[in-house]
Length: 274
Ligand code: KMH
Ligand code: ZN
Image 1 (cartoon, rainbow, N blue to C red):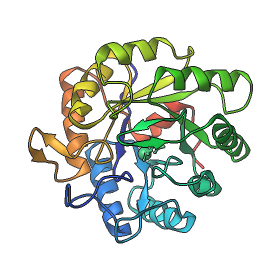
Image 2: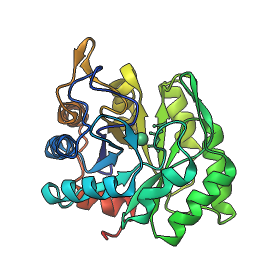
Image 3: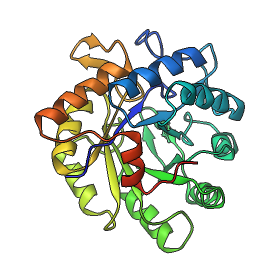
Image 4: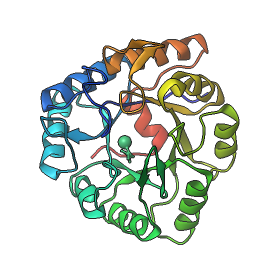
């Protein structure tokens, strides 16, 4: 089986220090969390950034500062900046990191409920994001929260509106209001991806590891991190993103799946280092 790519979603836009004091806000804290994840075995860091007070921002300068600082200590890591940002941000705000020389970025594949809020990703927005990524040679990680999202983005690829093969999907399951994080739902989605695509599973909250284990066994890749889950086990806060990544590495070892380095992840994803 292909080596396992572990992505660490170290920060997110919604979680706070009140929920877990290790959630990073400052550049130094973001670097600390990225390094802990990479040292534990993550090949990719999925990045959101914050102001020092914790406010989520898509500011290009803040992204550049964080990316440069991470690459100083983890020179090989693949960084996937978010273009999802936080609920309520405009498309222009969200697109700012795509003006930087990045290898990949997320592209969210449809509007959905997000807890009590609505995460807006209209088709015109997705076409704008896809066009920008084609122009700037950025590989999207297609974030799908629903089967309809997957169907939509595959249709857009066929129309040449967003970057095409080889596609990388991230199935984010367990967001309140979206597809539940069950093995059956994951299998249904995986069966629907175009041949030659790669995929990652992200289980939200208590589903982080119960979705990671089947994804590892099925030959997919795994995302963990504070963006998705703050606990290492029931009732016990994780001390770092590295601790969450290390747990995935242990599960993979038990299941006989080797973990990919960032260089190996680039090969698997068809990326060229910029
Ligand atoms: N913060 C969520 C509303 C992404 O990074 O592209 C959206 C999100 C997805 O986190
Ligand atoms: Zn994100």
